[in-house]
Image (cartoon, rainbow over all chains, first blue to last red; front, side, top):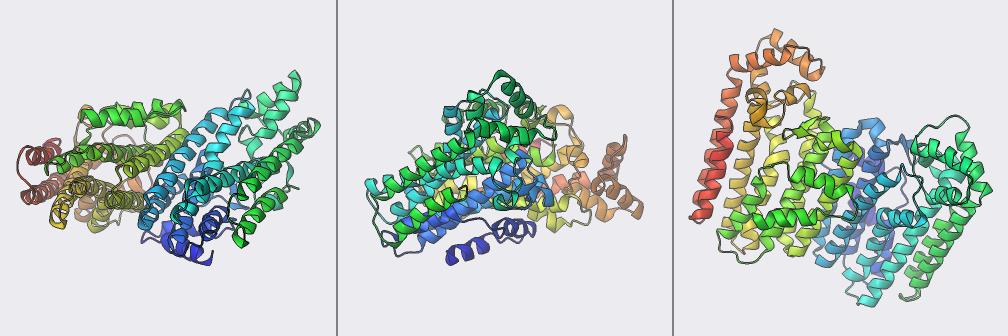
Length: 311
Length: 311
């Protein structure tokens, strides 16, 4: 990971001052580097000896960072990982453009590695992520979003990059389709688990743990699984409440507390965490098809870490 | 070009409704398709027989379209090619995300073609374009921008994509370094000419010709070559005027007319067009190193077309 971090910092450089400034703000603000870790472990577990996995891991983190920059603009977020969001410090304009720059750098780095298959996997993920974000934009103001709709959103916007990050490991290590599929499945299931835990934390975690304010999703009118479950089980009066807050974005003092109360009343938070655990178990199952050893253990720890954030 | 247009429309498709809606709005709104034409001509002039050039041409147009979507958000533009800008119709959020989607699709299509060298050229262009836009963001509010600063901006934000679009032609047609350099130089010089003509048109063309309001650059506080030249030659009183309008973005009725008057007084528009002609001549010179025939003629016509927009 040390090499990945070095590469990330050097490739975030540019003669245009604002670029490294913003990139370093984000990169040094304590992201978990979960995605690049998947790429490293999924290559090294096959005894891969080159340095292409480090470059791919750094590209994956750049893709993720670019997404964060654009997301904050789209969601009009004020905070990111407990710090002011880049857009609050440098403006929306710079956030959009520096995101574009990081995406361009990510592709350049992938090209350096020279694996067309890894390029195909990561460029597809890039299009799918954007598709997921557009989908979420449509769902954001619609309380009739179903659980299935929502799972489609998070598969695209979160799980797809986890899946791609893991899959390029066996790809670059020249493994067979079975190994690629196992790594991809592991990443995909972990991605679902990760996102559902995030969704639950947004209503249940403490501000300090989350690194951003609790209730961001609520205030931004985002429909997440806890809300979908609570609405499905709630009364008509509840629906009026959710409609006002989420579709109308008309949130008054005390509404977040009422929302959390409803989520607890209908077990929506605990059930969201239960589903995250199920996805985590699926991820662990996929690991059984992959070589055992220290890297496999690290990937299992990543699953435990994701779930532990909420329990 | 028919094949390019078909591919563009099919690859702009998505199950997420908003994406084809926005993409088609932009794609069908009468762009000149200059960049993809360069790719096609620069491949076909070498007798290239595959269909990779069509795919690369479509990717180049997608990269360009993504840039337009993000630019309009960054510049807070209301109009684009005489129509309401996408961000006015669907919002900034959708414009950012659909731009990201098109960029992802562009990379996927390039990967389909399978030329790592073309991928390297186009992904580098993508990072350079974003760098140029960030650079322009910094220059936008600074009337001490020099001619050299400005040329650096347009090389990155405009000429680099023209250069890449042309260079991938001989690359995919397996030509030698000399041919690649000639095509790249042609594209780069044409790109400079194109941007300078655009800059002059923003102060001198009629609204109908330009497809967007005259004075957009002025109202957005953009420092372009005509302004750089006029400021260098102007009085202290002129500088106070430019500072108020461009740095302060404090533009009142009659200011645009006064700006145009100053640009004419100091021959700043005609000189900008003269420089565009010089770049155009350089582009024609680069063509001499490339094979003659109908495709070479079409590339020469593209230069004449660019210049003719303003004269």
